Image (tube, rainbow, N blue to C red; front, side, top):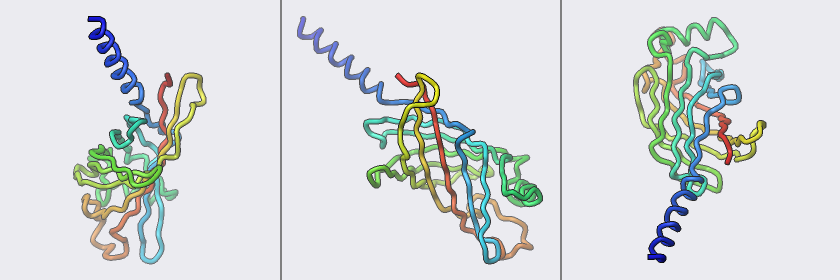
Length: 194
């Protein structure tokens, strides 16, 4: 009986220890951003979304068991040109009035290097959902600025075809605007430590 109790206690401890390594981090929108660039005629222009929210549920012992869900406020688009911002938010492109949010939900993480992962998930833009792969790099884990908090930071990139998501633009643009969009994401997320 003592042996059975000891085994049960050991098993319970193992379960608790395993759970202790799975941490949920909340994305800090103040220190996170998602940006994109694409060709206009010959040159490229860049833009960013300054409101990124969501959570990272990370298994520190095996990050391939992790999960991320993120939401981007499309209305927080900033190209540094008010007229262009308004056009990109219009029905010609993102149609922010009807589709104010973009979302990403991961389905699988694959380790590709010492600190790199391919994160496969569903990206939804303008109510169109497609599977995409984010090429992510872990920048690190560390203590937060406030006592009892922890931080993690990540960067990710991917390349999309804007027309796959219905972001077509007016026909008058013809081929002046490129279809291929390079996406760059930078995330800092925090959690209570201990």
